[in-house]
Image (cartoon, rainbow, N blue to C red; front, side, top):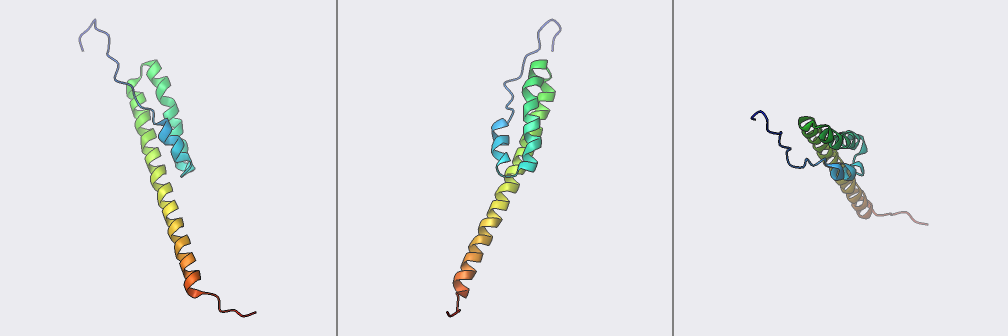
Length: 98
């Protein structure tokens, strides 16, 4: 950077708020830090702290991904257990008489 020239702003930094909000429906304990970090991005950009904004966006992305992964795995486990439970009930049948 040469003296006398204004510092160029990086391209718009994505705060990942949308992914954080979607993640809160799948695994809210991990999505809360994602939303907190996503809400820090825009104020940091306005203050001129682009490195801090990028770090907050990266943290938000990390927590959102973990929340999505954990939430989808838990939903998959629940679906598999329900399917096997239903199949076990069908196969076992009821042999009770009235």
